[in-house]
Image 1 (cartoon, rainbow, N blue to C red):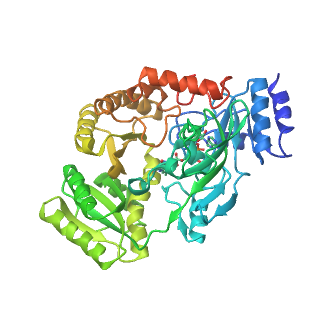
Image 2: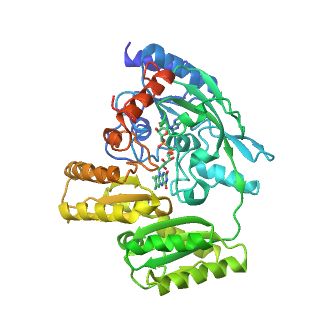
Image 3: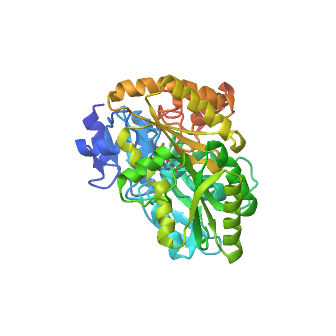
Length: 464
Ligand SMILES: Cc1cc2nc3c(=O)[nH]c(=O)nc-3n(C[C@H](O)[C@H](O)[C@H](O)COP(=O)(O)OP(=O)(O)OC[C@H]3O[C@@H](n4cnc5c(N)ncnc54)[C@H](O)[C@@H]3O)c2cc1C
């Protein structure tokens, strides 16, 4: 069948005007935040109901057309990229919080609800949705579930997975499944809900999600501490964790701070220059908690781990300190960074970081490396900035060599090649560094059970 005929059939499945094929839309909806692959979808379709999603999936099976689920397209692993004539299924018109249950503290969301929208909804109810990161204003709940998104509060609240009470999914066969039905306790065999979380749209579509909400945190207070060297960061984490329940523990290097200062719109935390910085946050519920934080800070200074520090005294200061960390991704995107999102156990972080720094520094001394990340949960973001004199292709080719070394070190420490950004297309060739051949065979068998014709996001997680 010709492309034109396929598009006509697709149009019949949804409301008028809900299939787009113009060049701008194909370009915009065919890619995510990664810049490695040229977008080339056949069309973009916007279902408004679950029945329409099922009709699209059944049609795709009949016509052997590949489908790419699309959220806010803020993904960093090319998992929502359509580069091979696929139909992109976008949820911009399924974007409502459908209901709220005050006793279970849950909100039923359509997949296109923006993460920030759910955070604000929770706030209106006097509650809190704790999954948060710099792209929360654009990413969608469907995409967050597709990637099992983490972010800046994982140390206290865990990943998106922890907040999914129930899911409605349309499988790659077109079946509608209601998974876990929002229960807290449910010991009835395999929890299929968990398989769809982090599946990157390879098993089917999330078409509705019941998300748990939490009590609102009280008087959040942040500290930014300047560390004497990298080895001091982990004892600082340890010292604070022994005294306080942290809601965040992030870190960034002097190079990351320099880029933020270069923007000119964020105040410096303090004047002392330090090689690394930690940003920690806690609920200052009582005077005693704030005093414990200050006493721990002093202890860290006495030990020589910390050179300087500042504690927020107002909501504005809290926000300004967070900007130092939250603006990094967006700010360095100007230098076409090669991004790696890797994790090891917390105890292994210092040795792991030294190994990687040494190997990249030795082979590519001209590359500027910007470290930052959610170090409190062992997750580091290694960003290599493109030198101006290298073309994008040359740069990415060199980074592919770096990748191998980085992932060998990840493997040595039993770590993960993708802590929270997913595998998509950018990490799929390296999956064996984190997953055994036997595990991958089981994963492929699971995909075949839900998507026997391979129409769901082919080429993501595994090679085509
Ligand atoms: C500045 C910046 C900072 C970031 N910081 C973080 C961070 O701290 N932590 C973190 O985890 N991530 C972070 N990210 C990455 C990204 O925001 C997350 O991966 C986010 O969860 C992606 O959501 P999305 O809606 O944009 O999904 P997309 O990029 O559109 O899609 C992601 C995956 O989900 C699938 N998908 C989308 N919708 C559905 C659906 N309805 N059903 C099934 N599958 C679906 C897609 O096919 C794809 O595989 C950051 C990104 C940026 C740009």
